Length: 263
Image (cartoon, rainbow, N blue to C red; front, side, top):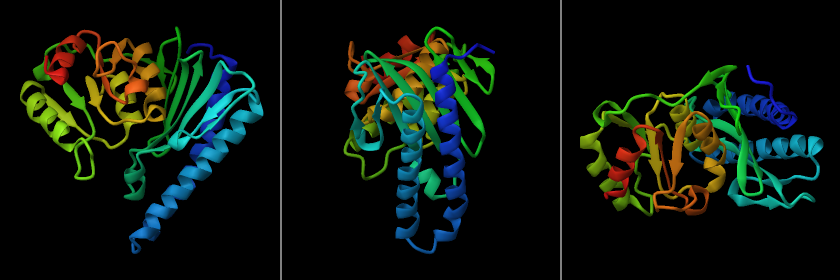
C-alpha cells in the first residue's frame, strides 16, 4: 500500500468518526417509516450532525484550512489556498429508504485543484481514496478504471430521471440517444458512489447534469488517479464549475463523449 500523507490520515480519521455516527442513525431509519415526514427530517438532521463531526475533526487537525459543506456553506480559513470540501450524506433518498448505497466523502482542494480524496460507504464498508500522483485505492488495494473499449459492452451510470428534475426532457433525450449504443445504463442514486465505482471499473463511465460541486469533488480525483478521464459536458470547462460531467475509462471516453454531447 502507498504511504499516505498526513492529510490523508487526517481525512481517514474524520470520515470514520462521521461514518460511525451515520451508521447509528441509519439503523434507526426503518422505525420512522410510518411517518412520511419523519424519515426525511431525521435524515437531514443526520446529514447535519455528520457535517458538524467532519468540520470539528478536520479543524482540530488543520485549524487554518477552509471548509465547504452541504449547500456550499463555506467557512474561510486563514490559509486561502487550502479547503476541505465535504459531502456528509450522498444518496439521501437511499438512506431514507434503507438502501445501503450512500456515502460520506472528503476532498482536499489546493489552489483550486483537488489533491486528495476519501470516500466511505459505511454500510458496505468500502473506503476509496486517492492522492495526486499516488493512484486510487479501495480498502488498501490499488484500483483502475475498466479496460473495455466497445460501447456495446460497456455499462454506464447516471441519475435516472424523475419528475422534479428541471432538466427532465434533456435527460430523457440523453437516455433515448445513448441507450441503443451501449451495453447498459444504471442509476444508483449517489453521485460519489457512481464516480467511485467508475474508478474501480465496476462502471465503464458516468454522465450527469445539474450536480453540485461538493457532490463530485472527491470522485473526480478518484477517477483521474485510476486512469480515467473526467470532463464537463461543455467542452473545455471545469465539471465543478458547470455542474455537468462525462467520466469514463481512457479508451472509451472519446466515443462516449460524442454520444453524450450528440456530436
